[in-house]
Length: 86
Image (spheres, rainbow, N blue to C red):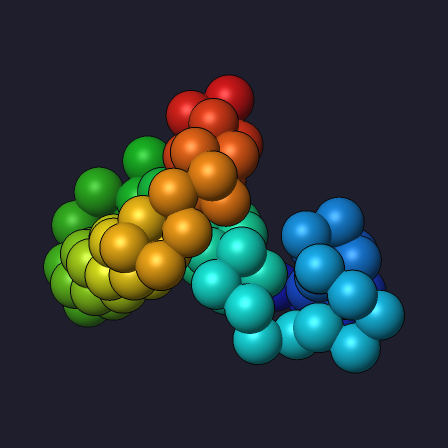
């Protein structure tokens, strides 16, 4: 679970302007952080199938956001894709 401070820090790092909280970049960054945390949870709790299902849904959601970003603005997509791989 992301705390409010963690979420605010992610938003500050990825926002396009001061009041940006819903751009694809911000949403992808938040989902990516949640995926990382849930993946580490699943490493210790291997039989937690309910959380595994949530992880799969989050990965699909992130993929949809990336696909949208790729269609709308290829340059922003390339930058975001590099952040995810790093």
